[in-house]
Length: 281
Ligand code: NAD
Image (cartoon, rainbow, N blue to C red):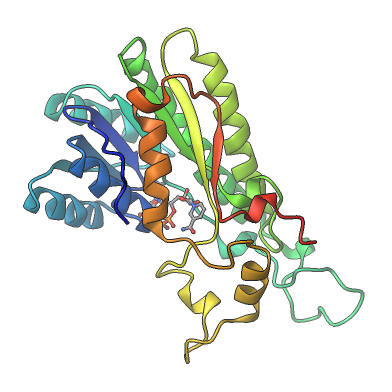
């Protein structure tokens, strides 16, 4: 998809966590195409390096950094290296996040009978819940503590967090991920207010349902026909289709671009084909 609007991030230092992942590797490439110096941060340094190499090969400016968003020392080390390579951060994208099977129930509803073999709400593992909460919430808060310090009073400085559809209304089976993303939306508003006197805007995007490598087998059978979950999702999406990762880019660039969104602060922008607006009736 080609955006009709061009955004210029020439010489802006864009720091992206979770940059070896499906969405944030894509975001990294798009920011590089728009002229930014992109720092790709991830636990998986090799994968981040692969994406960074691709960007450089195509003429962009990027570097990969190993970083655990749950460890302050690791984030500080990455920050110091980025500062030397590119300068201080202008735009922070808090992309690291995700769910975990240990925090997921097998069934949508708790029934009186027939759950003997199933992992129910009562079986959810505390460490699994903590893992999901920490990765999504603390994994956004800690990098913000480290990078936002350098962003104070920098022209055009802003932060974009990644929330989700399930932050508005929780999805079945994934209570921890839903609650953690609700915390991200809430924290986005809190930060937006907190930093409003020092020139850092803070917003979030809330992607709806996208088909990615990881969830393809959940959404489609081997013969390509839709699974029951896909039917439910599409029935609940007024536009009756999945989104594509490139359909996030317009919203992301808009929020990041001071020329387009200088008065946009504290919003959680849903990109969901109308899913969140639809009551189902
Ligand atoms: P992904 O699993 O492809 O990528 C996540 C990346 O984060 C991975 O590269 C992983 O190595 C990295 N990571 C994990 N733990 C880390 C840590 N402690 N420190 C640093 N890096 C760490 O995920 P994705 O699908 O690209 O999703 C990106 C963001 O978008 C996540 O916050 C996710 O919750 C959110 N999101 C995704 C979708 C979707 O459909 N894919 C929808 C809504 C929201």
